[in-house]
Length: 112
Length: 112
Image (cartoon, rainbow over the protein chains, first blue to last red):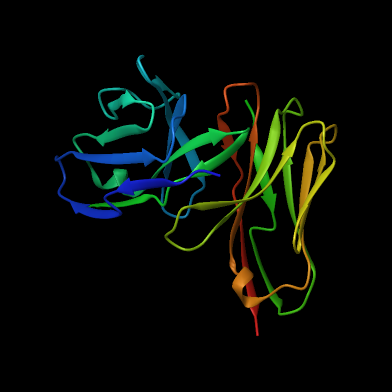
């Protein structure tokens, strides 16, 4: 398995501000994934973060809105920029280990 | 584009019943399929992983089957307990990029 932690666990933010979410894994991984779960919805992949290269974004997600850093093989950050109420969601990071995917506890974001 | 559907969307059963959750996917060329559990406001817990070459996997009271050619998987829960109450999500990896496509989820309530 994998032990994944995220900070913060939750936050309430004002419209127009930005929030950076941190994800820490207990051992080195090549790829880290960031997902979004909007209220009452399933999970949607935002981007894949590889160490040493730019993140790969899925259709509908752009780097200016969701910049990602991957400074080493155990850590990544996702920033939600210029937030609006539509960004209120749970944001989860995940890693793949032995073909199985493991998830962090999530960051619950509310934008007022 | 892969699409994953889960039926039923919600299910309420009395304690002790055996139950089946269904998952279907449109593109049968999957790499693997994974079942998750999500408690309200929480992250995801991996339950079972089935590789594309496998037919089923078991863990305790849980049994997951995979019929790749027909694009279907089922999660069987034996002797349900109130602690099984949660949302159950299935997700597939199509291709080798380890990116998950999630189903819509089944919200399960087990009553006393």
